Structure formats: structure tokens, C-alpha cells
Length: 316
Length: 293
Image (cartoon, rainbow over all chains, first blue to last red; front, top):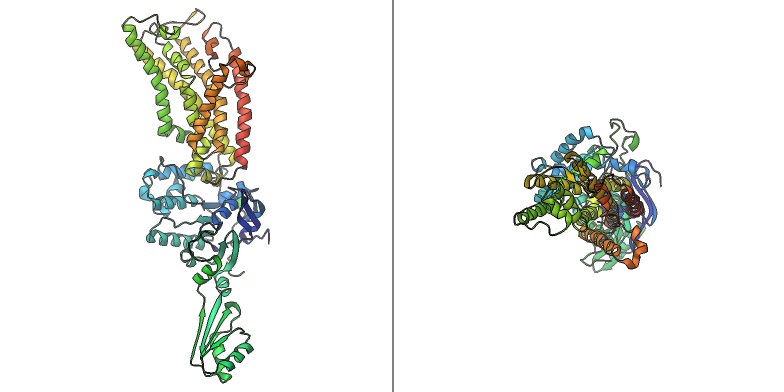
């Protein structure tokens, strides 16, 4: 759906190849305006490469990118002033203070008014809790402080879109919570937030939408509810009437259950599942003696692992 | 897809409340401030300032012991007139010290930003790749002026302290006033600045090729030295007029009466050629490159 005004980020068939290696393999991102979009995937799944292409730092091999309804990188000059970004960790001049670093970055944006520069810089520093360290050289900053400064740089002006690549890297639990707060408050102002992470738990609480990357492909995308619905549920029934139970379940469209003694189990797609109480009511009506019944929905975490694979092995 | 909250933001280029900004002075001012406030830049300038100090002190000590009459003519004349110190130090610095200083600054332009990772944030600002390159080159040009000026001014200062100051005999034998001699010294500094513009463009280009600033610096200095070696080999005489270092020591004309401008003009044309070629290469490279650092 290219050209959609309601999408803050839209890509079609986006491919990025480096020297024969396909880092991003034909992805169609759709990030609605006003959403908080969690861009998930294990390390090396192509998240940062995608972000680089979105922001015009590297060129797409194939496919198109639209940011805030405009083609990238063609309209980069018009689009980027409205985009705040933290890409692959913060980077600053170690010999300059936090304030001086932000002043320089702001000066680099030729649309940023010089008149309000100092005010905006100090407001951004205050917003990430660096007001007291503003005059210190960045050389003396801890990793967490640099990360905060990076976020401050993304907040130098009014933004329509924030792209935060692993924003909680290096932050302590306190800082992680603050970033989560910050994301929520920015989203409440109507800013679209696109936040990448390899940890589901980190984004689950703040996101409205999720996209999951695995080995360069976007393997799932949608609202959190949609993603959960796309998973599976495990039905467990304890009954001495296994055969009858299978027939009743089949009449509900729930095929593939197996009987083992008095245990009836089935793994079913969550999306089409009737309410559990309805299943039990049907079973009872069919003269099945229900002695135990559980319907366990796969957690988002399980879903994430199912989509991206488990373990430490680097896929590529 | 559900739960969309469509914002009412106006299209990015038509939102009210953002005044028309100043065009490019901000980034240039920031670049110059960052360059000259940096310790490394100051250290390089300090090394250059050390050359006239060293020469002046050495000549002063040997002059006291009556060693006058030995060594290069210019150096010998120092003891008679302190105003020679700056120009002499500059001439001595041209083969190596000045190119090394330029190489350090020019090689660092893009590679240094890439190495720190600040290149991606400048581009995201968005600084604009072409604009960034122009600003970076402007910064090196400013340094090209600052380097010889430092040598000449420090030289004139220490010369004035350690030696007599008076009317200065030129290479042509005429004598000019103190005021005019200062003007001539500044001309020589300007000549050296122009001489280094080509090397600066080479350094800028090399700097777009790598993310390792030290590599770009070393490569730039190596090219400067190579150019001078080739210029000294009669076997490749056909190549000499095209070497960036060919006119580096041609400032003698500026120290005669009347002043000759031939060398200055040929040098300017040559350097402009280098700027055009290597500036274009740097532009082509930076505007198409994937910024991965």
C-alpha cells in the first residue's frame, strides 16, 4: 500500500545486499502513524541494516521506502528534520561536552533555527536527565550516559517519527524503565516511535505494533493482539470418553486431537479458536465427562521464539 | 490492521512555527570551532610554531660563537635581521612539516567522523552529504591558512626578540621597509596556503575511502612525499608540471623587486586542477557510499 498517508514508515520489497550477502530480503514494513512499533529480531537478523536504509544512510538494493509519506532517499532533506534517530549506539566527539555535541548536531540541520538552539539543547538534556552532566566532556560519560545523550540528540526538535535502535543498550534497569516512560510519553504526544530490540520483554509493555525479523525476512507484523492470535494454543482435556470427545471437537472444527488414556490433547491455531467455556459446554452437551480442561495460549515470548528460533547460534 | 491513531500533523515541509533558518553558516562555524578547539589541531600548530623557535634559538646561539657565514644563505641572514626567521622557517617546513600537518587535518575530515560514528548522525541531522563535504573542505582550507601564518608570525615574533629588526634586503638585492617586509612574509604564507589546497583535496578524497583516520593521514602524507621525490627525478621530467608539489618552493619571486607572479599563477592553476579532480572524486565517493560505521 505505497503512498499511504496513514503510514509513518512503508517499505515495499526492500532488499539490501552487501557483497553477495543478503542482509535484508524483501521486507514490507507498515508502521502506522501514532503507533509504537516494536521491531524485533535476534542479533544479526537485519534490523540495523533495515534502519540504515530507511534513514538513507545506505542505499536499498531493491524496493522502495517511504517515510512520513515521502519517498526516501529522494526527499531526505524534507523528511529527516522530522525524524529523530538513534542508530547502532550513540556516537559523539569525546573531546566535546554533552552540550557542545548537541549544539554541533543541531547546527548540522540547516532547518533548525539557531535562535532557539541553546534552549532546545538544554531542554533535550533535561528530558533525559543529563542536565547536571551537560558541561562534562563526553569522554567522561558512562555507557548509559552516552546512550541518554544519544536519545537527547534524537529529541532536539519537534519530531513526527523517532527511530530508536536498541535504545536500552547499556542502561541499568532504572534507565531502561525511564526509556520506556519516555517512549510512552512521546507516543502520547502523537509521535510515531519505531523501536528495535532483540528482547521482546523490553518492547512488549510499550508497543502497539510489532514486526519480527528473522534472517533478513519480516516473518510477522501486526498489532500485539494479531501477533498473539497468529500463534497456537494447547488444549488439554481429561476425560474417560476420549472417542466421543474427538467427535465433539471435530464438530467444532477442532481437528487433530489425539487420545492417550484419559488425556485428550490438541495444538490449535489461536486465531480461530472458540471461547474455552463454549468448548466445555459443547463437550458436556455431547455427554463427555469433563474431569479437567485447560486451554493454554502460547505466550508472546513463545511466539517470538517460534518465529526467530532459539539458542545462541548465529544464523548467518 | 487495527488500533491506528492517525496524527493530525501537517506534511513535514509546511508545518508552522519553524522560521526560515540561516543557510549554512552554522555548520561551518561549528566545524571551525571544533577543528581549532581540538587539542590535536593545536598540537600540530604548536609543532609548526616550534620550527621558527628552534631555528631562531639555534642561530642565536651559534651567532654568538661567531659561526656566521656557514650554512644556507637565508639562515645566515637571520642573524642580521630577525624578520627573516618566519619566512626561513616556512621554507624549511614545506617539504615535510607542513604536508604532515595538512595530511593530519585533511585525512581526518571524513574518516575521523566515520571512525567516531558521528558521520551517521551528521547525515541524519540532515547535514547533506555535499554540504558536509564542502564544509569539511572549507575547514581544511582555513587550516591551510592557519598553518603557514602560525610559522610566519611566530617567526617574526621570536626574530624580533632575538635579533635586530630593520629594513630587509630582498633576494634581488633591493631593500624594503619593515612594513613591506611583513607584507611580503604574509604573501609567502598565502603562497604556501594556496600550494597546500591540492594536497588538501587529495586528503579529503582519501578520507572518504576509509574509516581509519590514521590510514588516511598516512596515505596523504605519503602522496605528498612521493610527489616531491618524483619532482626530483629527471627521468620523469614530463610529469613534473603536473605534480602537486612542483611549485611548492617557488615563492622566491615574491621576495624580489618587482614581485613576479608567474609562479603564483601557475601554482594556482595547478592546485585548482587538483581541487577539481580530487574534489569530484571525493564528492562521487561520499554521495554514493553506504555509511556503515
